[in-house]
Amino acid sequence: MSSINRREFLEGAAVAGGMLLAGGVALRPLHAAEEAGWPALPTVKIHVVYVGLGGAWPKPEFDAKAEVEKFQKHFDGLAGRLGDVQFVGGELIPSDEKAAAALVPKLAGADALLIVHLAFGDGGPFLKLMESGLPTAIFSQPFSGHDWMYVPQWQKAGKRVILAATRDYADLDRLAALLRVPARMRQSRILLIGSAQGTAPARSAEKIRQKLGVEIVPVSIEQQLAAYNAVDPKEAQSEAEQYWLKPAKKIVEPSREEIVNSARLYLALKRLMVENRAQAVTSTLCMGNPCNACLAFSKLNDLGLVGACEGDVDSTLTMLLFGYAFAKPGFITDPLFDVSKNAMIHAHCVAPTRMDGPGGPRHPFSIRTHRDDNSGAAVEVELRLGQEITCAKLVNLDTMLLSAQKIVEIPDFDDRGCRTQCTAQVADARAMLANWGSGILDGEGMMTQLHRVVFYGNHVPSVRDLCQLLGVKIVMEG
Image 1 (cartoon, rainbow, N blue to C red):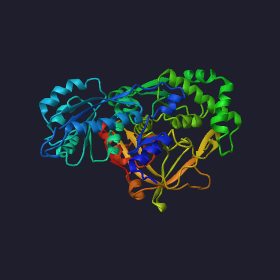
Image 2: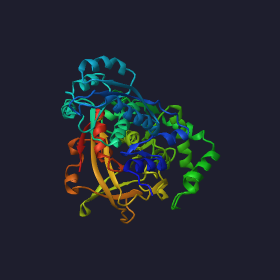
Image 3: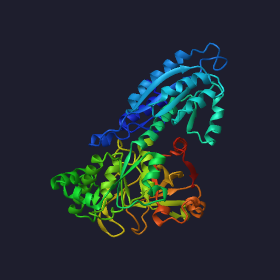
Image 4: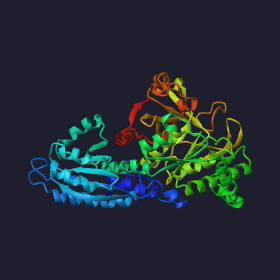
C-alpha cells in the first residue's frame, strides 16, 4: 500500500468534505449559497511577486527561475482548489528597491499582494511593494535570508502585513485564503431589519463602510412582511418538510404550522438577500415578527451565509470574517460561567446544524420552542463533545475579543436557558469572569456586553494574522 503525506491526506479530506484546504483555510466559502441561488461574488485577485535572484543565501548556485516555476505550479493548483481566487503577476525581481518601486504601479487592480521571498536582502523591496497599500503576506522559506526579522517591526508600526516563515506549503495556502478576506468584506452587504445593536461604531453604517468596506442595507418591517406574504405556501411547506421536518431527530413542542412559518420566513429572507446582493442579515424582529427567525437564521448559517439575531452588528461582522476565512458558521451565544468546572456555558436558541461548515454533515437536532417565551420554533443542536472551539467577537470595529476553548459537556440543568448549549473548558474561568469584556465593553447594553460567537476549531493563530491584515487589535479573554 502506498503511503500519503500530510498534505495529500488533508487535501483529500478537503475534496471529500468540500470545506477546507490544508492549513485549515476555506475553500470557496459561499459555494453552497451560490448553489442555493445567491449570486457569486467577484473573483479575488492576488498579485504574486518573487523577490531575490540568489547569492550567498540560499546558496551561490541557486536557480531563482526554477524556484519560481515550482511555486507557479503550486499556485495554479491552489487557484483551482480555492475556487474564487486568481493569482496574477508572477514577476521575479532582484532584492532591489528600485526594481520593487518600478513594479508598484503594476499592482493596481489587485486585491492583495503575496510576496514570495527567495533570496537574501535587507527587506527594502518588501517595504516598497507595500507602498501599494494592498493587504500583504510574505512567504519566506528557511535559508532564503533574514528579511523575516523586519516584519514584526513593520507590524508594530501598523503595516498590514503578515508572515509565514516556513517550508510548509500549507501555510502558503493559508496566507492566500486569508488575503481574500479584506476583499470579500468590501464586496459584502448586510441586511439590517429593525435597528442596529452593538457597540457605537458598529451601529454606524458609515464607519463600517470606512473600516471594513461592508455596506449596510436597511430593510423595513413592511418590506420583510411583504416578502413573507409573497412566499407560495406550497413552497414553504416543501422547504419545511425537506430541511426541517424529515431530518429532525425529534419535534417536541412546535406545531407543523409553526415550522412551516419558519421555512416561509427563510424563503422571504432569501428573496430579500438575493435581490439586495446580501451575504448576511441581522434583525431585532427575530423574536417573533412575523415569526421566530431561529430556523431561518440556522439555515442561512448552514449555507455559509450569516443570520444573526437581535440586530447584533458586532457579531454579524465577526461571523462574516470567520466564514470567509475558515468556512465555519458562527453560533451566537449568551455565555455564563460555571467556575466549579473551570468552564463557561454557551447557550442560545439559534445555532447552525452544520458547525463544520457548509460541506459538512448536519449535527443531530431537535425542533423546540424558543425557550424565553415557549413559543414558535427553534433548534436544539447536539454539539460535538471534545471539539476545540474559538470564541470571538469583533467590537468597536477595531478590537477582536478572542479565546480558545474546548467542549467538555452538553449540560442538562433542569431544562434551563436556551435550547442549544455546551459547556466549554477555558484557561481560567475565575480570571475570565473577573475581567469580562476586558474593560472595552464597560457601559454598553446587556446584549453588547454579553454576546460572543463560537466557531468549531482553534483558529487563534490565523485570527491573529487576519486581524493584522484588517488593522484590528487582539484581546485574549482567556
